[in-house]
Structures are given as structure tokens and as C-alpha cells.
Length: 309
Image (tube, rainbow, N blue to C red; front, side, top):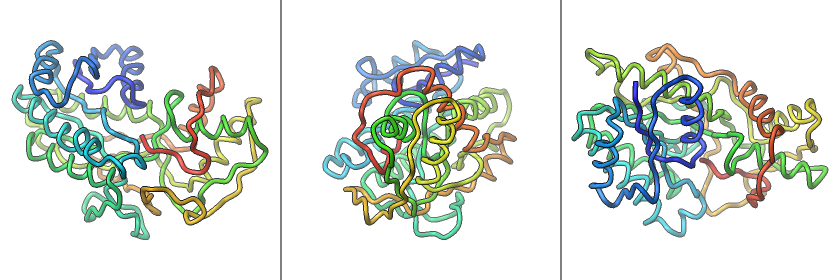
């Protein structure tokens, strides 16, 4: 199996590259400046050069709050760009795996969202990602759209790294406690994407694998609960820890509205692809372990809420 990954520096893209090296999967990752989503010819050239079995779009505009002030940039990457990638893959006769987000939902539902629930994004970022889903589906029927949430990894700007940095600076950290979701570890996402890609790369009728799926770790928590798990895992390894002070969303206003309920029901994905992601607690343990093995990272400026990736 040979994969072409669009994106090189994001959390999932980096996890895919690392996982491919471990598992022996042939993978080519492309991104800026070599790839310009506004230039379809560069997409065609990337596909021709890589000669993949499956294309994975792991690139996105993820500056959630910044998107409120520059919607054109968000839509150019997350909607127009996603459609261009899907069209180029379709022209080459290739299936596409495309990553999406919990932000396509309003967050007002009281139970986990299923794929049958009506999307109702409340932010520019969420609207751009939903429009991207539509563009992908229209341009390439051979698509698998994977919605995931609360991504974290040992690299990049994310909640785990922010919490560890803050714990080294203060005794207590205020974290939003009235939003719930599922922290999902980027390497676990990478393994799941490979499981999907193997199905798509196999000969035969692959239509049973196409569609929209929710793909997250097992279990759920709040951002405050997430922080507590990070600090517990860190303290057990001799790393920084702090007391968590739960606050409300109203206490920490942001330009973009965050979903109060980011929980995604992954039962359809688990059944169709016979693959279940590990628990979110397991992901946190492994992420903290990896973070403490190296530098925690630079400041992100996010004290109580992370920026989704």
C-alpha cells in the first residue's frame, strides 16, 4: 500500500509519517511550498509523482478564532482546497480519506452526535469544514470523511503541551469544565487511517467503505477532566503538575463559539472498519510520556481552552 498525504506539519500528518516509518507503509507527504491548493496542476503533479493507492487529506486551516476575522483564508483551504484535492484524486481514479471535525455540529445536543444528525456549525471554522465535506463528496464519490475531535500529540500546539507548560509556571490552572468531548491521540488516528486505507487499497468493490464516519477515542470527559488526566500522568512520571480550577465557557470568552457537546458516536466506524480506537486515557498517558521525553514546547497563549487541530 502506498499513500499520498496532503500536509506535512500538522499533528495527524506527522503522526502518519511516524507510523508509516514504524509499520513499513510507503508514504509520501507533500505540503507548502511544494503544493499549492490554488494551483490544480500542483495537485496533479503530486499524485503523478507519488503514484499512490490512496490519497489522505490531513491538511487544514485550524486557527479557529483567527478564522472569524479571516474567513476567506479558512474557506480557501478547508472548502475550496479540499474540493480540489478530491477532484484531483478522482481524476486519477483514486479514493480519498478526508479529515473533518466535531465543529460541524452546534454542540446543543444532549447525547453524542451520530453521522445521521444534522450539522449546524456555529463558527467560521466549522462552516468551512462542513462546506469542505460537501465539496469532497461532490468531487469524488470514492471518499471516506472522518470526523474526529480534541486532537493532541507530542508535537505541535495542543492542549496537552499547553497544560504541561502551564503546570511549570503556576500552581493552579483554570480550565473550562462545561464542554464535553473525547481527547483523541494523533498516533491512534494515524493507525485508524491506515486501517481504512488498507480497505480502500484492496481489490474489489469498495463502496461499502465510502461515506462519513465519526472516529474518536473511546470514552468522554470535559476539558477540565482532560487537564486533570494530563497532570496525573505527568506527576506519576515526575513531571509538572497543577491544581485544576473548573470554569465555565462564559468565564473564558473566545471569538469563535466552541461546541458544548463535542461527543461523537464512533460505533458506525468501529463496526464498518472493525477498528476501535483506544481509550482517551490511554492516549493521554502515552502523549504525556512522549512529551516528558523531550521539550514541552513553546508558548501557545492558550490558558483555558485549546485551539483544535
